Amino acid sequence: MKTYKIVILGPPGSGKGTQAKMIAEKYGIEHISTGDIFRAKRGDGTELGNKIKELIDNGNFVPDDITIKIIEEKLGSIEGGYMLDGFPRTIPQAEALKGFADINMVIYIDVKDEVLVSRLSSRLMCKCGESYNKITKKPKKDNFCDKCNQELYQREDETPEVVQERLKIYKEKTEPLLDFYKDILVRVDGDQPINKVFEDIKKVLS
Ligand code: AP5
Image 1: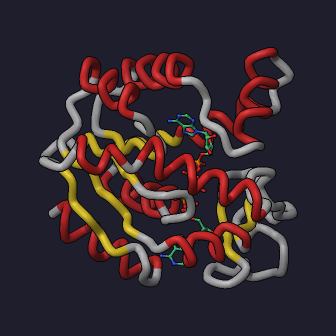
Image 2 (image 1 turned 90 degrees about the vertical axis):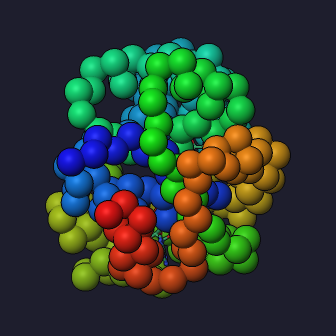
């Protein structure tokens, strides 16, 4: 079987994390999310953790050098396939990635801005890593995680102002990657139910 070394690209709220988890489980590959890595670091009380907290809570990117180093180290410890969710996010990150990884596919989840804003403002998170949505993916018991029963919360970077800032920075810094990866890029319509998006991705991967 082919070793999948995939990048999943898309604007904030397009469903990268949701689909990446499903793909990683189905194909037995590692899911690496820079967002999850940084959220874990933001509360660790270190100087780096505090700097990351300030940046991500305001919708800004973590500097390229820090991000690239983390991913290069992480990939160095992985034997099989993987799915990169949230990396690369800038042209310098994509250039650096070329030096230490052989990416064979980029999946771009395409969703309109209005849908993104509504999805992000209704997202609920659990400390265990599960993600829900007040409209499209409700937990069975209101405000509690189906898997571990902890209380759900909203992310600090999901106020309307910060969501707009994240979208603006995405267009400026991340959208140019669509052209950078045009030879290995596959577009999937992300404005469909979660399982339908997953069906389309499986077709692309088979
Ligand atoms: P990160 O966590 O990666 O944020 P993001 O890219 O803004 O992505 P999201 O997690 O908000 O959305 P998603 O596309 O994963 O969608 P999801 O599946 O969660 O990064 C956070 C921050 O860290 C960044 O802003 C930045 O500061 C920093 N950072 C990260 N990587 C970096 C890098 N490389 N360089 C520098 N800084 C970096 O879904 C969203 C919601 O929609 C959920 O509620 C979900 O249930 C729902 N949903 C999903 N799919 C569907 C569907 N098909 N239909 C209906 N609802 C759906």
